[in-house]
Length: 126
Image (cartoon, rainbow, N blue to C red; front, side, top):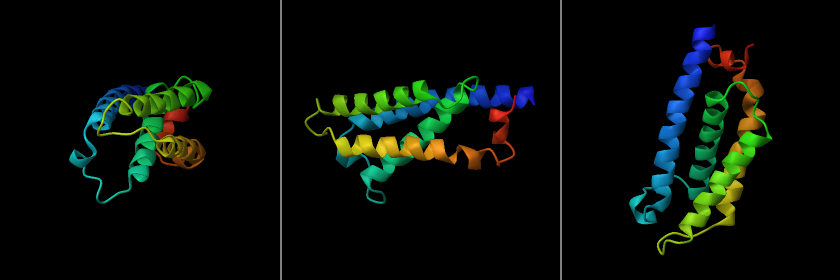
């Protein structure tokens, strides 16, 4: 069990870094170069922050999904929007921050369901 938890932590940290790099890169590309035809921009924000919430939680399993993790994620979302305001082909949007917050909130409320999945429930074991 300890090996599974360690594996989830290492993989969570690696995937977290990869996702932050990719999301940060996509945030500064021109909108036309990011193919969002199939999904709404808000849905993409929601999904990205749900995934980031999961990865932050798994990357640092010694603490629960607490206010510090939530503030970190919201700060990252706000930072992305602020950076986008400096690019003429991007814009800062409060609605994007709301979508980010919704992704974080849905992750928080989905934790009891995730605890039922055999492989990943080890994250919450003692």
